[in-house]
Image (tube, rainbow, N blue to C red; front, side, top):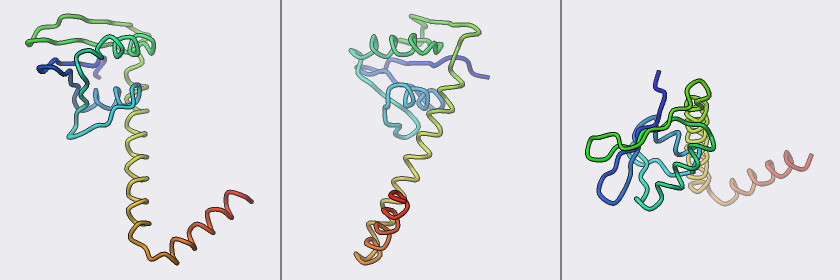
Length: 123
């Protein structure tokens, strides 16, 4: 079981991939694109503070060498925020799909949906 985020420097950006991207999405609301999250080098300190506040283990890698590592041992919350990130991305995808479907409907169908939603909300 993976226990830390690997954050790799690539030029003027740091990136995290796959599950690590979901964790960063959960804690910093970064958008995942092509299975990764990226942020500028000057934001690293902010990200480290967030990870430390939430007790998430991390490793900073530059030129294929670990330059910094934080280990919260049994207090590590990586798995918790991984699940939050996965669920959040799933919900956003469902929301985007719903909006796309609504946008493709005729106006009278959208009106019916809005009437139904308002009825449910204000019951």
